[in-house]
Image 1 (tube, rainbow, N blue to C red):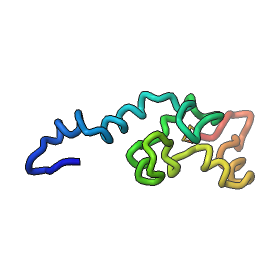
Image 2 (image 1 turned 180 degrees about the horizontal axis):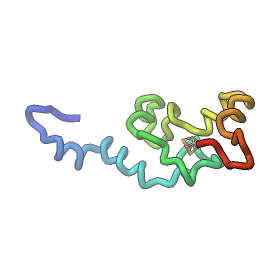
Image 3 (image 1 turned 60 degrees about the vertical axis):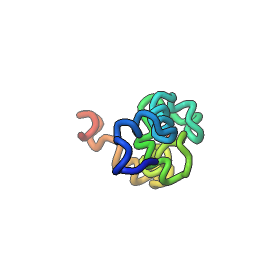
Image 4 (image 1 turned 90 degrees about the horizontal axis):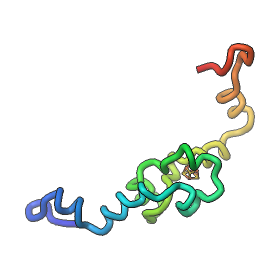
Length: 96
Ligand code: SF4
């Protein structure tokens, strides 16, 4: 990306193509991010850290699989999901 003794971090942040692409990913709606189409959480999810997504997938325009809510819910079993997200006392509302 640069050389710490020669280039300012500000200059690199503003001009380096990879860093520009990482910043621009934040402006892309999650419904248009590859791998996120059809996800019911796109209105609430920002894909987490784009740098981590890049580190884990090698692609800039991806949600961070480590923090993907859909992936998490698919992995946990129904009993864990019910115990975690369903109210224990429905008449009082969800346990917070
Ligand atoms: S929950 Fe996962 S699949 Fe859904 S928008 Fe977020 S990162 Fe994408």
